[in-house]
Image 1 (cartoon, helix red, strand yellow):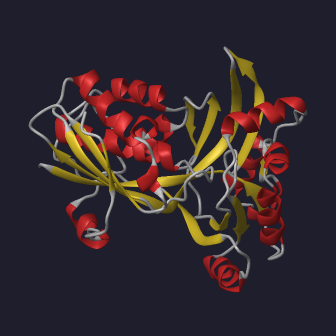
Image 2 (cartoon, one colour; image 1 turned 90 degrees about the horizontal axis):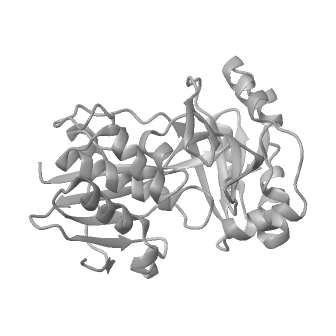
Length: 322
């Protein structure tokens, strides 16, 4: 097995409460889920220990090597496990700078792909993921989950029915660091994550919609007016609830059915990129190689590879051989 294809799913913060600070970092309590929107990460084994990353789509070609999490993940994997290197190609579909976790998803996809190729202890892989970003460990598994602390404390939430979202993604982003600094100037009070999870477990989507809240939204709005425009446009379709994911700038509107979600997308006449997406529970394929008991939900089975196809052609940017 010399090549592995990996689906790296986006995530959505259904809630995000800021619960305090520790060691200079903000602590959160967030109900998160994987979305059907994904980047495709292709990992090919090398005989040496070098790692290269080629990016395609969503403007990712311009990401400098020192800021490319996929490259950082590959090089960190080789250093940690003493494995061979890899040539990585990332076909991006997740908008960048939107709060959908695209950068962390790509890092997790590279880790999952290299673990499938070379083998890796599961706990060590999780620790390596933590070093690459606060939500990268979550991205290794995905699904419905309660995320606490800096993002490393994960509690899976039993899945219920699929949730359907209209995503409105402004092209302008919001810096996470700036957003948290702005939040500190006027911190919000109250916590909704437990209430939202309780409503989800009851299957009460209307009640759940009322708890879709992001404590960072007011700060993001002060930094980027597009966030407020997207929020108002999403609300105009009378969804069950609207929230911002991450530190923005993507806004998500919850609908009770896929049909209503598609209807809203078809009627949207705003200037932002719009997606109809649903939550997904990544399922692990039949593994060809064991790596410390970690179940990777991202590595595609042969059937999934055939169904997903292989994006060919296009001019991508190769982020340096190292």
